[in-house]
Length: 427
Image (cartoon, rainbow, N blue to C red; front, top):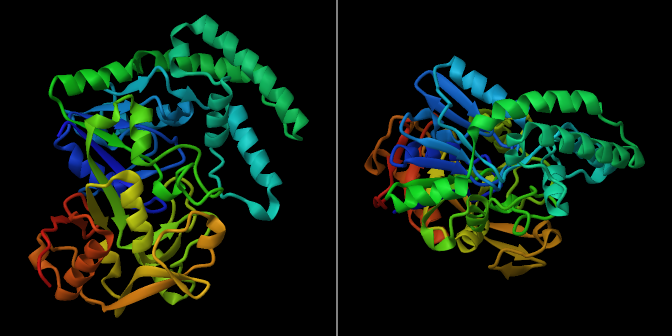
């Protein structure tokens, strides 16, 4: 299968990096197709932990070409900080390629992000204030600056200066503070010079890899229900993390995407505001936070937690055309005396089988649960489905049945090898 897509099937933080790292062993190219440095991917290799924001997780393999695709917005200070940290730990990054068509983030984008969020008062979106949304807005307004622009240093400095002046006028009009134009031009002239060797026509690169019979893995940031079109709007990100976004953000046409892996956690989390039908506001919710270490890799923010929701997962299967699922963090449920699986909703007293198309309706649904016994034993050493306790197998089997596509991988711990193949082992 030449092209595999990995997407988050919940509200993010599903453990995509672990699965991508696992799959990257069998791929030649790993490419990010959307998002920016507002999402963190954590990979644990032995005693080493790698927190990645922009660079694709496949960078940890010598045989992989990591690619930042045209659909990504790139913050250069973050990119080079990440490169420097990785290379200081012996991970070479010279293979990295950045799309000439990827848009760049500038300090005025971050200023706008903070200003807009502060003006929302009690209706905050929960943005990470990284400038992601304003950078995508500039892209849509056709005033963005792209990575390929750095290849002409003089023209790049000129366009950065002109755009900074215009952005300052907009910031002042909106009640914000202007950026230091000269300082920004000087900073990005240096950063642009450093970026130039990494810039490439990545659409051609990816197609050449496929045509040569190499395997390509497309990696999304955030997740299905943060998608700008299909998420719980307005509490969404500024791009399309769904599988459809993989084509737009990489340049590989839809017919080449033949394996689409949805990543889910054994429970549900989300960051920031927005409806959350299965949210737990009790001691069990706190236990999920503590045991699962549910704090943002990038922001450190506490995540909201709740039981797994198969209604939203069935919708994720539809929207992404998922061919299979990887279920992570099953071990986080080890100590619970019982576990719940949301199998349906009630809305205004009536059964609701479909995922609501409006956030206000989603905020009103009541989850319908099936309750299963917990297994109350450590499963981190399990390496086959048969090794799992009966109750854990019952849980995985129920989720698989409810979601309607096969579960292929089950994660039982944070370590790189703490996974097993799920073969539908009978309970």
